Image 1 (cartoon, one colour):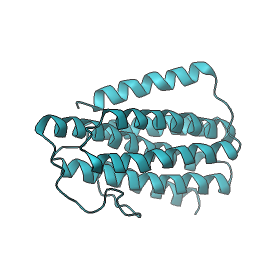
Image 2: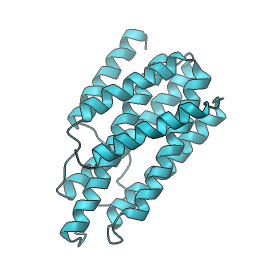
Image 3: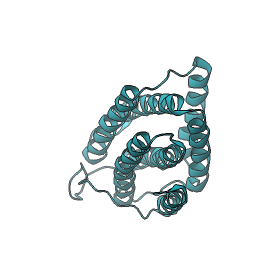
Image 4: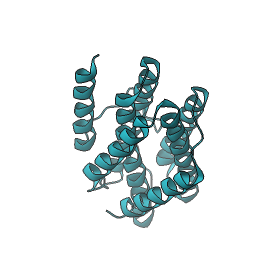
Length: 208
């Protein structure tokens, strides 16, 4: 595809992501819908955590789409697009789980997408090694974040846990692939800034 075609595809992805019109290519790790036996406080906690995870996947779509647009080589562009497709599975799974829990996605999803897309464009403009370094740092932070959610999710919420486990493994693989492709290490202040921004996002998405 030429640059115009890639931009159209990216815009289509943005609309589908924000509108919730996404579908997974892989089966849901939680299996077919089933009763989970959660009490109301457990259900509310699981819903809040899965909403945060859904926001993370909205941001992942924006980041990968932006970095694919700015990638210097077809190989890196293809790698970013493949990661985005796998993140689409995460997006669909978390959205489905929120529906099962009777909860909702974040009201700020258009804002999350726009902000993450801008960050992804900036990272991509800095060159492929730094763009890949941004992927590594982002995915490592997401992996840690998902591990913390496995500690916080209700013990009886096997469905959410199954989804988060697969997401965590995918994020680790994306980071490893970016590192192997020639990622440059990001300066410590940039990593700290990313962690601070992620904290603001997760705290806000937990409620809004």
